[in-house]
Image (cartoon, rainbow, N blue to C red; front, side):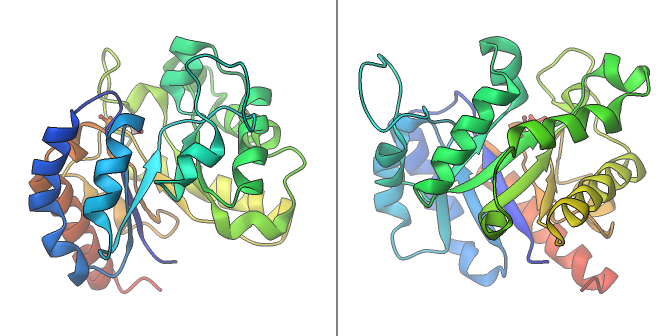
Length: 256
Ligand code: 13P
């Protein structure tokens, strides 16, 4: 499957900083055969989309509200996102944990986003406690089932799953990256779920302390189709190194 690299900037960077970042980041992108997306704060999207015009970079929002318009102070509609971005990130664990987002609310957002022709990167992943209790597979299956409820299979080209174990996200206390074999096992499980549910797979990318130094050992695994780095995507050189090293490692591993 075609590799996918999404940088999740979270709540970082001003528009001026984003412009400087893109001055470095955009140049090398045309030499990479992969989907490359920056998930920027809303405020940055207009300037970033202007700079990215005519380049291989796609942009994504980090959230949306599942209504077309109305009295939802502080929220952003799918149509507003679509003016500047082609992707949206949904179900991130930081939104689940800090803002109380539930699977059913995320499901509403996925439905609306797909209806508006946005491409969705849906995050799933278990907490440290759930992993310790041996519940990782059950938790992720439940998240998939609930977040994708009533989503028909003809949408699969517009859905990417990001497996992001909460315990691996660098900003949570005690975080450590998943062992490649553990990530691979969960990716295989997610792909298996899709095959059972829809008769075909979708891309599954990994997020959680991805760095230039550990991307190669992860990407050589069969079911890992790319990455969603957070911290390491904030520096353009470091994100470019992740993309470059992963593509080279994939080539060496001769994965289809
Ligand atoms: P880190 O790469 O900083 O661990 O963040 C991962 C993440 O949450 C991406 O969505």
